[in-house]
Image (tube, rainbow, N blue to C red; front, side):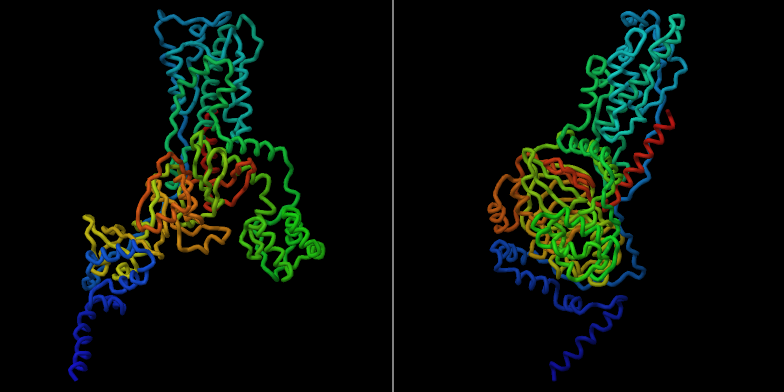
Length: 637
């Protein structure tokens, strides 16, 4: 009877307490409030014990600092609404306005300063007066470079005698061939003075020559700058872009051009000097000379078994042409029988799956955009745009990409380790969702973390965890997370009044190493402000999908042990041994750049260019930025 009496009184005692809270407690929260937190968390750790001695050791050590849960705080009378942390946005690109080049210092130079005359013709000093009233618009840094160079070197670069010299003729040819590199020749146009003139018109000829001199310098410098670092500043497109400035001393460029007799070699050397850039240039030339695809398939086709489409015969023809001999031999009869059939019958499903498998696609038997793009390719115009976009983006990168290096191409969903010009290792990756896009930048790999902790970003704490924590404050305690304050002290999540926080939570949250840890066995760090790194994942099934945009922004690796061994210059067995020893870190003791890149056209190591879907629509945004630049340049002549 005594026990029965207590079993009735205990819930009654807490009924009044619970009645004062606006949110009903979950059963497991009530258990924590009565008997202390961490019970279920300890159980999950116990389940993991015995699998790894180092985990057992850490488990025993953590018992001494296990946070003690306090009764869940009451909901605030007026809880603060959650203000979600937004992802970076895309901006309307604003190109820098052009400025007038100032010739004031040249025009007003004291007369006692001598100008070296050009042999056999007009001297620069005699021609400078022709700059009076001349409006030449150029980019601000180019205008400054012109002013600086001619103040220090008051002489012609592009004129000899009374005509454009051989240096100028060659430079003009290079500018006219800008389209070879995906640039717009119209943005570098300069009209040279006519060859013939009347000697009685020397003052007018001097004016023509000196103005041509300045115009050609401005456009050559524009070409060199565009070739070296691109026409747009990528960081203005979005916060997802993060590229360092590529400094270029344009006055020194003009100094060099004034001394060389081979301006072509110098100007073309300002383009990136790597094999991938050259492969894209070659691809552009081939594309422009080629005809349109002979078989054009609707890019939005989505055909499932049992469906009907006039596009099916085209796809069957492409399967037969693009697949290997073994495929053609096995399915020759079926391909011939259904060559003109518009109905996707069940007996065609194995054929479609085999074709998809031959191209490394997910063999799901559905003929969708990914399958169409792989076999039919994109239109000629679309491929040209993709290559021109890739050329522009490569100019944002170092000219020498480095060796060894890791190259992650988000639209391809691949990560590749390249050494001595050879792709030694390539694997599938998962990248960020459209709402949590992976950024576009490059960095340098520093270390490997084995059995890592996962420091939960504020955006995930606020946007995804906070709503649940308001209803279930003990959630983190039970799920393998540690909560610490600004001083590093461990706190039970159930003791925190989560209702009082909205856009900023003043606690750090990290997930402890375990089989369920979001980062899996290891992560590969290249510290950056975007908190992006490569890592393992327990969600292995996602690698079987063709489109792999599922993460919060980090890059999940299909073969993390292989990549870790590659960048460390060691073996997979070494990496496995380190994982078996528990949580630890290992420094990468050599320089390995990592490119977290975004290219919808990209060459393999043999120079063959592959094309990919623009999953984040970044090509379109770059096209608009380039249009903005062109509008400013064209408006100024």
